[in-house]
Amino acid sequence: MSRILVVDDEPADLNLVRRALEKQDYDVATAECARDALRKLRRETVDVAVLDVMLPDEDGLDVLQKIREIDEHLPVVFVTSGGESSTAIRAMKLGALDYLLKPINVTELRSVVGRAVEIRRLTKAPVEMNVDWRSSDVHSIIGRCPAMQEVYKSIGIVAAQDVTVLIRGESGTGKELVARALYQYSERVQGPFLAVNCAAIPEALLESELFGHEKGAFTGADRKRIGKFEQCRGGTLFLDEIGDMSAVLQSKLLRVLQEKQFERVGGNETIQADVRVIAATHRNLEQMVSDGEFRADLYYRLNGFSIHLPPLRERGNDLDLLVKHFRRHASREFDKDVHEVSCDAMRILRSYSWPGNIRELQNAIRQAILKTSGPALLPDFLPAFVFSRSNRAPEEQQTNGDPPLEVESIDERKSTSAIDNQADNEPINIFNGITDRQLDFNSPHLYDDVIGAVEQQLVREVLKRTAGDKVEAARRLGINPALLRSQAALELLDLAALHHQNEDKPLIRVGMTLAEIETEAIHRALQQSGGCRKAAAKQLGISTRTMQRRVKELGI
Image 1 (cartoon, rainbow, N blue to C red):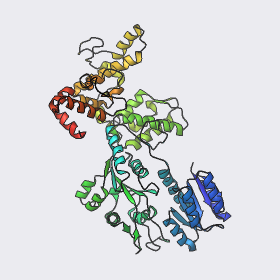
Image 2: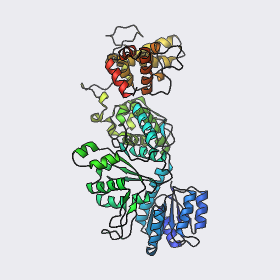
Image 3: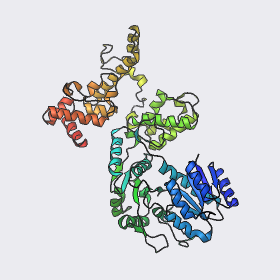
Image 4: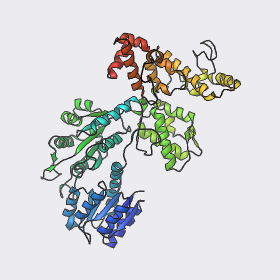
């Protein structure tokens, strides 16, 4: 629950604000003077301060400066009478979020405070990256696939550089999280972080939202307003869905990026813009430029550095990590003891293509946890849309109408395994066969034996489908071979040929990404072949063409 501190020496106004915010489920603390307010800020955690400009013991501007010494990121909303609005505007230039006029409009109050709470959330909670599913923050960036590793590298490269960044990716892939990470690792972290969704605000209001307006600039402009570029001085402004911005605003934004200055709507005063802009879009800006829908010069200005977020359907085993992550947080949110997702439910989740990406997955898991009544999330609890055949993942769709391959039905497939010494054209039962045999021998490693047998069967089947291309087979499996329980890793990358006794470290180490394993393997193969790519490809069991492509892609 967000905690709001309301400071006003007028009891009627103080009670009005307190009651209005408490009805919105905020935890409200009050103070009637600056000294009491500053004391509470030093002792208590506060998310937003609503502060009267004129207090009996101190001027509002002086109080704001002291608040900044205690908590530099605390959103402050000033309350003022009409005649004192100039003081509030000066306060906003010093870092206040907004101001309200007395008599207080409750609807406007709740809107401004709600926006302040959201800004506090964006700037306060650090964005963790490349973490596992046990992360305590539901907004962590979870992912270990090669594409996400490139995202982490890009954030590390550009975060500290004061350049414009364009984040590309489908809706729901986590572009705002990347923007927040860029802010939190930047030199502007002491300044504010503000976000504007260009698609969610009508064109007539978006210009005022970004650049502010003078009193009387248009119908309904009953007071001067400070826009996001002015509020965000010294900080970072995130413009989401930039592709939906109108041509007029594109022109004005271009001037800000080029000349670092702008005017408020209806005003003549030139204001300097000390703001770093991070933009994001799910649209094809290059095509929009070609079609005349987006300014080419603005596109080049925004695209100072580009980060591409992959869709969830292309992230392999990251889905499993995200499911565990969201299951854990939804269980805690709804006070449920759901500690696992059944194999059948996971099979259904993996077979869905997730057009809404991570946001859609999080919503599906929350709905399922809400309906779950026991310790396990079962298929019956999943929302209906995940069963849609029209949104099956491409690799799960069948042309003959048969259901997709399940782990439970792998015993019905043809096998090249020698486990039970049967011919290739006879169906074998891996589970029953190995289970019965190991139970007869009282094996203490029954689980590892069964899992190892299934892994070997799966790896050999994938190798057959890729015509022996080991690197492609490993990519399709989407797992670090070091995590396999069986000797199947040896069939993906020839460790016996590449790992010698005089090597300082093994080729495959737990925790390595698949890209790192490939790079290391190719490096060693090229060294042993004297730089001959054809010989190195033969040693790795891949085609020369694949070798050429991977050398280029991995930057070897």
